[in-house]
Image (cartoon, rainbow, N blue to C red):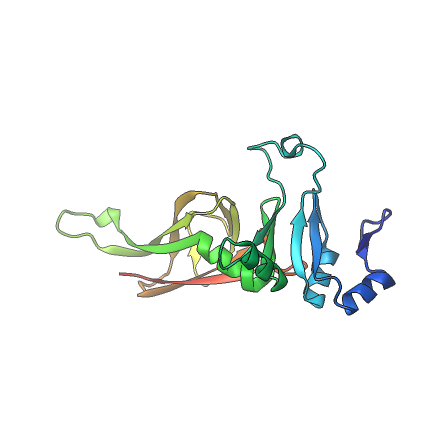
Length: 220
């Protein structure tokens, strides 16, 4: 796919179409160095191609991507085992995603399980009403404390799209990498099961499309 020098838009030529139609091209680069091509992502999804991202490094990686300041584009390959054969199989089966500028890019069938494996939500219980607190009696409020843990090396930017408000965060908030934090979820009534739903703002499963992922929490 060629990118125009005048408008920056990637477009297919007749040669590209011929190569795609003949099955001679199985993957497409949607990220190169510091550039993301929404058009290339659209072509990958339409043509059922493997999605990859590359650094295009011709020198030392540290010169372009200083440690601790920015990360290089990474192609994540979901292989069954750490073997060359399994790596080839995963690439052929299009089991990939790209991590670019703290943004995950790929098919929903791989992005959503990756987010679920990275983020854990657990109900910590309804908060006691401190205004009525005594040693003998601690009546609960309908404000549910939820612990969210991010086990990944990526920050996640979430937008609350579920049925319940979060009292101690704005609608859009960040869960930093390798961290945990508490959310105060306003359920109005005390519930035995609480649904949560978030749009992952720094993940793309198509041009301009962010995945929405739900969790259902059991409350003891």
